[in-house]
Image (cartoon, rainbow over all chains, first blue to last red; front, top):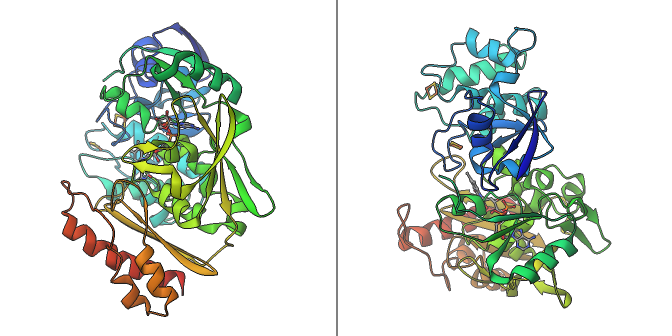
Length: 153
Length: 273
Ligand SMILES: Cc1cc2nc3c(=O)[nH]c(=O)nc-3n(C[C@H](O)[C@H](O)[C@H](O)COP(=O)(O)OP(=O)(O)OC[C@H]3O[C@@H](n4cnc5c(N)ncnc54)[C@H](O)[C@@H]3O)c2cc1C
Ligand code: FES
Ligand code: FES
């Protein structure tokens, strides 16, 4: 079937099988491999992207369900070569180790801060409960999110 | 993991869903948010030949004050339930329970109707709807029927819905902004409840249990004890009566029965505070 998705402001039109997952569409058809597959069972959040601005797990959504919608991946967050404030904050606060969870963490954070612009630490921990970090760098991740929200951690 | 091949039909209206279901019979499955169905399809535990995507039917996504009850469209997402002003004022318990489902990503896609139609006794919202004595509006080829929550859940992943029927609306009685509690016990964030207990006060006090049998269950013995004037502590001791708690990697039936008693006591205490 024809699926057309606006990925990072660009129309991506591909003829795919109906069973194609959104993450496959992004990685294998759009060749955007910044989105990672961790668990592949909707538990870890590594595959998180934004659909119409809201975080979703792209391993548990069909490309067909995103047809006609706006998708943002980690490749689409920077503007004119300047990192998104959340990316900058992850860098400044050393919120990544191996980096495998990072794209998903950053996008989950962008969505969270859209919904709760001034979160408490508890809001951040609950808001990111769908994202696992195997390097267990949660402390710095939470600090980075609070810093990105403009709060002194 | 990729689902087995299927034919994909995007429905624009409830009638289009019903037509596709009638045409394809047992082969077809409705897709709402996909948060339960897609994981099953990826594991090939479900292999529908036809997937009827109802996820874009705007007409089934609403929360409105309907006089003596709140009407919620089946395709309303958990996120919209959890942030609804109408529910905050008229049925606070549903808002609070929706906020406990999975994680943000899951709540951005999963729907109230999907939670109900899936019929998983470990799900949070069905127990709340059982405690509320909610009713469900079901549409099939022969028209519409109304099913009480108490008659809807038949067994593990088994409901009163026929394969050619669509759940269109959930009707929740107005219980006001407070007077409820939901105690959900799990060991990891984001997980399903090992056991959960919902208490709702609305004239009488009603209690329902998550994951204590093959369906969400009313704790009738607790309710009866309370109606007879028993204290919360004494009434809660009846919480495991009439249940059939499952054994799994998380807990033995005995541990679940213990949890039920403790969680019911906590829920009642909180709901009466
Ligand atoms: C990581 C993760 C964590 C989760 N944690 C929890 C949790 O803590 N608590 C909890 O309660 N749930 C949890 N869930 C499940 C979640 O609540 C699902 O959203 C919900 O169970 C199903 O809703 P859906 O809209 O996604 O339905 P779908 O997955 O699309 O459908 C589920 C089933 O219902 C049928 N169906 C859906 N809508 C209708 C309708 N209107 N009429 C007829 N049939 C219909 C489908 O055919 C299918 O059989 C979790 C899910 C995930 C992926
Ligand atoms: S890869 Fe999608 S949630 Fe883990
Ligand atoms: S940084 Fe390695 S998984 Fe999170």
